[in-house]
Structure formats: C-alpha cells, structure tokens
Amino acid sequence: MNLTLIKTTLDDHRIAKLAAIAIALHMVEAIIPSPLPGVKPGIANIVTLYVLHQYG
Image 1 (tube, one colour):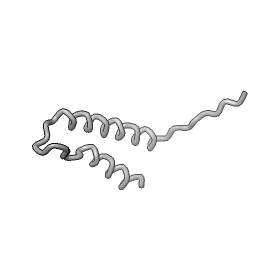
Image 2 (cartoon, one colour):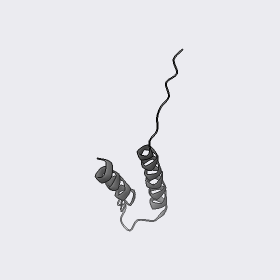
Image 3 (cartoon, helix red, strand yellow):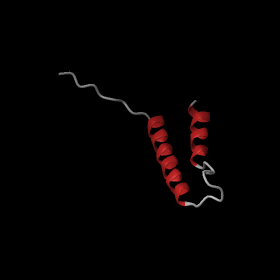
Image 4 (spheres, one colour):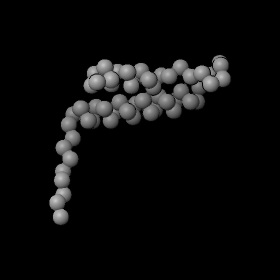
C-alpha cells in the first residue's frame, strides 16, 4: 500500500489563513443589518481579490 505525503508550502498556509479570514468576514457581514433588502457590502470579497492579485 503506497502512502503519498502531501507537501505543504508557506503559500498553502497563507492562502488557508486568508480563506479563514474571508469566511469570518462573511459571517460578521451576515450579522450586520443591511439598509436595503438583499444588498450586502461584500467585505469578504476584498480578501478574495487580494488573493487573486497576489497568487492569480
């Protein structure tokens, strides 16, 4: 039985941390009441755009 090891890099850890931050921001954003129904500011998208810019 072959077991393969997955090598993680510093970039993997950074992206995982940024994903956790984006999820936390999304959860905080869901708590904040919106002035218009169905409209959210999309704060978590800032992290997504940063990751795309850095690692895209």
